[in-house]
Length: 398
Figure 1 (cartoon, rainbow, N blue to C red):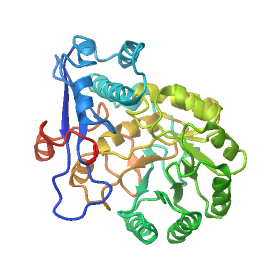
Figure 2: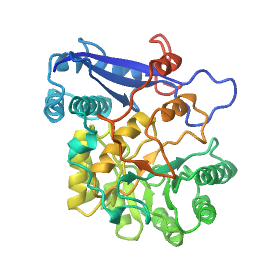
Figure 3: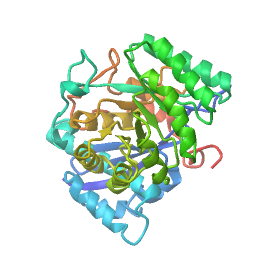
């Protein structure tokens, strides 16, 4: 089997007629890799401006396209090394490594389809055990936690909208949640956590993300002390990720797990988080970290250091499908992040979720389909396709 074509296409929500929420998709790049046997591999390229994705991956003259044409796609690790080494005198970070991660996921998708096996079996098989799932759940399922944002970031919106969304999703059967009191003072962070735990009760998982809020350790310590009574599973990104000294000092002063890694690339940055930062929960995004090949290595490093891996995903369920396969393989992954569409207004997110791995009673059964287990129907692509002359950007202000 040989790679014959690399293709980038962009999907986005239609122009809204009224107010929009923070989950709207302006223009999200996807990559599809074609082979001479008719098998294709799919991935998305989260957090990369589509124009950059096109320059790196679209067609035979693109940065990676010229290196992939004619290659055997069922050797993902070999091709990962080939592409990574091609950047030796360039940039092994940033947008290009995310594009490498997207290629890697698409190659694993092809590998699975060519062998008629789900990707997690090729990664090493299902390693989930009963000590890492919620009581009563079978090991052969993955538990997504719902990331909750508000449409506004004033005090009333954060407290009102986020708690309301938690209640609505709990009624739909979800049982794990992360609230995001971004740019809020201590009292709002504590109050949102208190209200959320109150409506959830003692069972469901609850985590908190403040989005790199502080530069001083004292503010973080004071806040986390007040959160200890609410059974917070992890506390995410209290500091900018280049403040390893602050993470290390905080980890020594709180019993709460500290989490980070949504924008980290390659195993080397995650190793730094664990060894210098003392962090307890690693959150690789399946493309941002460098793909499934690199995510598997991150799991192995974390397991050897007593850390957990709870992969992140504030994108669509295409990326989410790849995340499920890592969780199936990983013996240290109790939860994965999910940007569930039920409480947000994005038509694209809703449409993709409808064709992805279903969530039943708050759990995702391990996939049985070959590859990552998702195909985007042509009619979905046609409905949401963004032409090259518009929307080739990640945010409206880019």
